Amino acid sequence: MAESFVITVEPLGRQVVCRDDQPILDACLRAGVWLPHSCTHGTCATCKVDRVDGDVDHGEASSFALMDFEREEKMLTCCARPRSDVTLEADIDIDEDIEMFPVEDYVATLVSKDEIAKDTVRLVLELDRDMSFNAGQYLKFTVPAGDSGDAVDRTWSIASPPTQPRTLEFHVRLVPGGRGTDGWVFKDLGVGDQFPVSGPYGRFVLHTGQDNHTIMVAGGTGLAPIKAMLRHGLENEMYEGEMTLYQGGRSREWLYDVDYFRSLAEEYDQFTYRPCLSEETAEEVAAAGDDPAAYGFGMVTDVIAADHASLSGCKGYLCGPP
Ligand code: FES
Image (tube, rainbow, N blue to C red; front, side):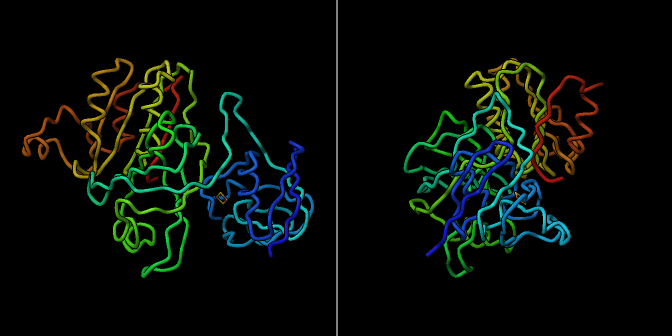
């Protein structure tokens, strides 16, 4: 049977009980004690904290994210499991204007799975009960064990706004050979299937109630959290300033929800939509019977630079391939 230990989180002075088979981050997020994190599987180092006292098993922490010489004094909370009571000190930079909600477990049922772009599907899930989250956060899916391998966790961003607390949208891109996509979402996963999820995770969230011009840059399925933020900002009137979306793709077959964002731009004066094509040219778009004036051409960064003499005073939200 699992043993439990007490984790003391400084400088908050909060104490959390954590099982010896549970990552410290997981115990804290479930107890409503927010700690910094991003990948949740030991590679990004966002969750690195000082280990002031106590022993841990560093688990699957990568040697890049947590170097050997750091292991005596630091740990990645997403991987570290306690071997005694532990005191940690974290740089907890909490935004006063954002309420972070505790992580909980849910049972999800797949309502629909539709191909929306090349190698990309939209999943709609129904949870067994409402979930509170912020626009831009993500869920952890448990990919069931099967012919493709053992059960594993995968994370995908919620693309729908928090005002839909039970019916959630996700965009998933095929990773050839990937256990979660090639081995499950694009293979066996079917409408009506049920599986465990947990969340909400992450702090890439819309800072509501502000009026800076917000520049949102999305590549591929990096559009998912950005779509949640835009819908929350516009449809739920949670953002006062201008919002501009630069959606990048190699060619039109990689872009999706283009008509949706065009209609959003018609409806809301504060919103500007700029789909950008990095490999398809204006001539090719015209030859296919589409209007080249409706697109930017080049990398999103080039199109942004051409559109704005300065981004001074703007806020940026970026998600997608580097
Ligand atoms: Fe990325 Fe822990 S959250 S290493």
